Image (cartoon, rainbow, N blue to C red; front, side):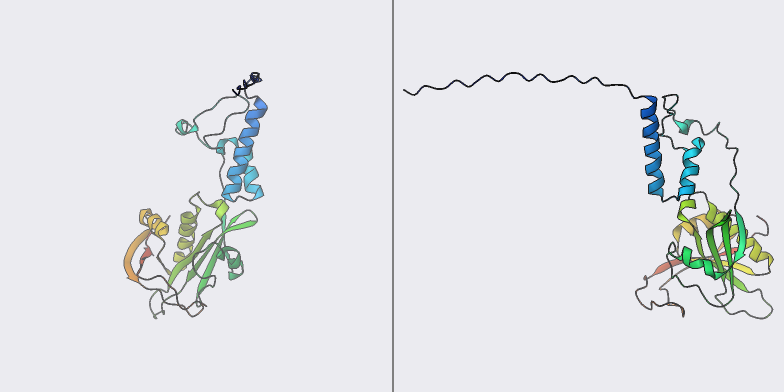
Length: 241
């Protein structure tokens, strides 16, 4: 009879015990810096804006741990008592169409500006232009009436979005144009712009239309437009802001 071989006994492997060390101040600091770095990169901030954000501790989001105290504070519970002392200052200057190509990449319409009577304004943060806005005459002007200028091509640079600059920029420029004895209008299909103007006391809804856009004379594209598009028309109605 064949004899069975006994299987050799395996020696038990001794696993090394790992001692978990508590994070140090340096670890907390490195984690916070990494999270801020990834957030700034994902938001598309330029170097100057990202550095200003990283250096200003009051602008850090809720999930950043204080590296010095080694503690987490839910900043959402502190907003009632928190008051910011610093202020952001921006300037508005009348500009030309030469700066539009830089902002056209961020706009959903044609990169070409309308013809006819035009007014252009820029929003500036120090030496940098961060916003663009145009006012254009879309309808023939009748003698004895105010010329209508429609605002269009409202663009705020992406790294400055989220502060509500767009509506403030529009209102300031609309008042300037209104004081020049023009009737200020706006016609668009953008839902966010509609929601913003609907809440703003400076604007009055004048018409709601549906239709298929037609190609303008300055547009290269003649077909492929959206069908049955809903558009809103607003009129600037307040004398003071």
